Image (cartoon, rainbow, N blue to C red; front, side, top):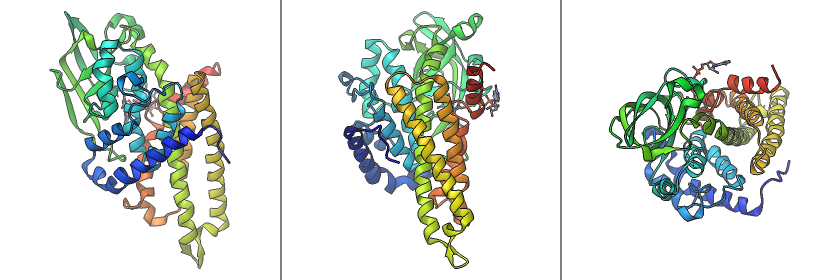
Length: 380
Ligand SMILES: Cc1cc2nc3c(=O)[nH]c(=O)nc-3n(C[C@H](O)[C@H](O)[C@H](O)COP(=O)(O)OP(=O)(O)OC[C@H]3O[C@@H](n4cnc5c(N)ncnc54)[C@H](O)[C@@H]3O)c2cc1C
């Protein structure tokens, strides 16, 4: 079905993202997987092309298109067609963190961070999850205590995307123990901050090319000038921005499923068994027909959510629906890839994609938590 949400200017961005990926990323993908990290020169190249600063005002070197999130959706789609690791690694920086660093910062902070954010000289991460739990964000334990012009941070974060390589981490910490969700604030912690250290790159089931790490804060001295947003409103700041993170995840999940499903459709036309293409068996034909239907029907809902987000009308509940459903559809597609034994070999994209996709049902709020949000909205 023809999609109607994109205009020629979005397709122009798509063409340049594809060219960047074909030239700089696809030929070196195996190298990034082996290094378990995306090298900085790729970030810098993405920055040169303007992909990192789409949501940043032009005065700070960005693209200034924050009012049209379709540009971000195009970027997420093209990155996810390579791998979910790319859409998440770049997405955390360029899409998830942008509203925090633009909307919650002072002019001085924006001047300090945004120009280098756009060029890729400064890579960012966001740290909410802790070893003791991520679903119940309100229960986070990392503390921040004021000490003159500084805050002393103590605690740990885990599973942080870009955590190993980030130069700047947005950290959620408890500034007032007595105030529950109203006692959480957000800090920018920069690399080199005394008392801030990182663990090793975590050994994940998939997404090898994306670095994920634990972060430790032991009397980490963070200047008061690095507090972002309103003190005590950190939880609300995160809740307000999670729908964009979740629709971004949904867009990536579905684009990844579409790309791998298209490759599977080619494969089943050429791979034969019992003297005929494996795709021509009625069972497989029906299975693939069901998956294509699921993907296309889902695309209509996701596109509708994207447009709602552009209009500032995407609800947290609709973002939750899009996020869990696309994660499920993506995993259904990748579980049914019909590549036989080759689908279990890492040299086949389908195998890696299957491993990569395990986490889309978990991160940015698990499928259970998404359904909890939807259930609450039903008054249950
Ligand atoms: C590769 C990767 C990258 C990540 N990147 C980041 C990042 O950049 N920044 C960041 O802050 N976090 C990140 N995360 C963390 C992620 O968001 C959390 O893993 C997720 O929110 C779940 O938290 P948890 O792992 O602590 O599970 P828990 O909260 O311990 O939950 C355990 C299980 O219980 C279920 N559960 C919990 N509460 C309920 C409930 N009320 N009803 C039903 N079931 C429930 C959960 O769904 C889950 O299945 C990342 C995780 C991974 C794996």
